[in-house]
Image 1 (cartoon, one colour):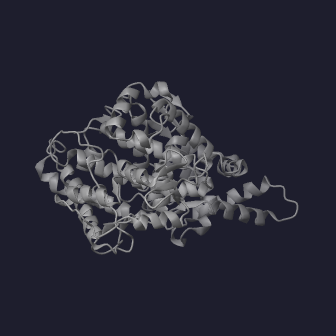
Image 2 (cartoon, helix red, strand yellow; image 1 turned 90 degrees about the vertical axis):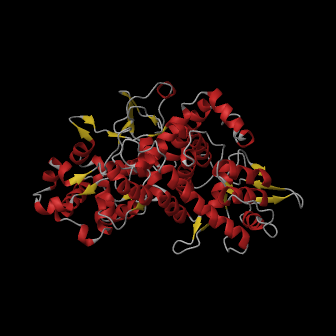
Image 3 (cartoon, rainbow, N blue to C red; image 1 turned 30 degrees about the vertical axis):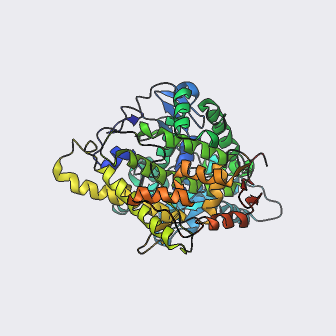
Length: 535
């Protein structure tokens, strides 16, 4: 089975699910696109430790990255129950509101009023304004209990770990007060089930760490062999430089929200009532640690590309909410890339290292006018599913698993962590249509195209031909006739010489409508990254 990063992590070699053994622990279909980003940034912004060395950097320092990791990466997320109940309780579903929760919110409001000084308004109006302010930062989970909801990941003070209310236990063991809940908070609240923040964000964070550990010479050899030299700047090909710049880019992005908002969030969460955060975030005065899972050590190439793309979006000249939206889509696109790339490594049942990339996803026009391209695109969807399906059944993946459990494990892997996860994520971000029904195929929407322009451009501009080749090198996306021919050969094992005319005019038109294309002549055009820092 694949070697793990970190090595010798608990359960790393003992996971019985074939998807965990192949892809790592874990990408899960119940985790939404934004929750991948929330969890990744939660790890980055939390206190962390590796091999008993603690640090507060977004990424592990270079000296720690350079050492062998024989233990899991631990991080200490904040629960932020006071901030969540203040912001989300009033907008949560009535049947999820427990009376003790209501009483605590009333007490929290009372304490906040005591700390207020108002001059031209009432304290009740100020409280309502603050509640609406933080409700406006809501990210995901409106149909869940207030504590299981999450804020948009726009500043460290709004990042919180997953907390679930154990309703059945509370019904059978009615609490007497909020203090009673806190004393027994591990019984009334669960913070280790990973139901929504389901470890996918931890995985992509580990992939970045794993990639940045590579020696420059090994990285340079791969970049040259993969034909990525012209799509990565000389600085981006240096893992030391990239490590430093990602650290800075995340820090700058996390400070774009006015400091007043962060201070208010901290004040509401732990400034007026400290006992709640003391119970939930500490254990005997020391931080409560959560252990990340593991990723396959061999996935560092896609991890390095993701690190470059993440850096390019973070530093883009965009509004913070635009960056967050694009990073959310990028995380999903990267998870899909991870599934098909790792699947390609094992689908043929050998240990041969495939070329980069070893797949071509045929992108058809959104309206599906070109029937030949549409046919190839459908075939590549089928090929992706077949590749992941076969990889999960590689003879070494479950060699120690009792045969009587295989059918159940494979069904679970296919439905929640394998090719159906790939399809689900593609439909969420609009890369795969239709959302329901047959005839699924790959397309691009405006948001995906905008993301590609930003995360594929090494500078302010690149030729349109280079843009198409970069899309293949990064994500295996095929637009023009030559690339679509390669896609047909990969998916159907048959050559296709003609697709009935230009296959990528629609891409040119979309770029032009977005103001990202400058025509120099009939045969040459430039794709301009309008969000580039050099613009």
